[in-house]
Length: 305
Image 1 (cartoon, one colour):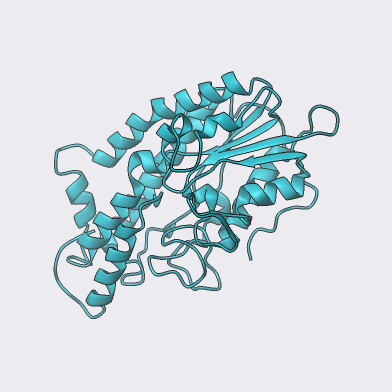
Image 2 (cartoon, one colour):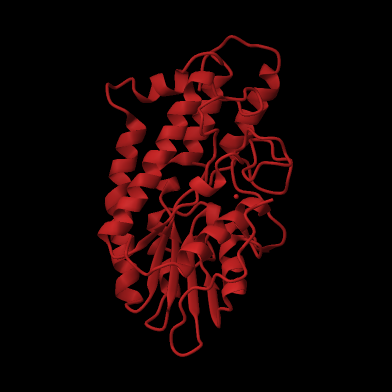
């Protein structure tokens, strides 16, 4: 969000914009407690081999306790909570902050290609990827920088539509075949697994009302960025349906807990976090809510929806 009428708080907002631009990862929910009775379907007798693939929304950067510095991975992220509640016999968390679909096939520092975690024995796979392919981190950095210049306008939307088409909508469309390719590869390596595509939680107020300077986007850009995230989630839902996978909605269950809410109510931290988490990422309550959504879906029917 952009432009330059500098209201009170502008310097703070610019510092927030700089902070977020430095965070890379996937920037594009107490919490819905993980239901005790929800268990994914078991295979191989009583065994459950669970593999988690994904980006920073999966890995949980900044959330104690960090167990992998290279990937900023927490042992309280939603895959760990799902594995514990479901009683997974074998659990591999391959998620890594900053991952794109490319990292499904290519190593990321000390993290091997994420698809290498899969095998014919894998029973359950969760996949949360695509935000970094769309460019969510740079988008937030750019829109925050524009927002402090024109907080009452919609400079970010204007910038991304300056070419005559919505560049963010185009980025989502271009990411769709990459998601399809990932899902085909998952099925090839784990042919007996149930595959859940996990969407992204609600980052900004669902009613489109902003909260400058706490989140330094221009007022007119909140709805635009909200709709961009919804477009991304719809694409993930569509690709799941087309590629023999199931979609887990984490947006709906997290509405009302976005980064504009008070610290006690939010499950997504703003650009200057008050709880341990990366800027514009889920905190521990956010990871718990996503775990609840995954477990609720896992306990439901097995149709590829």
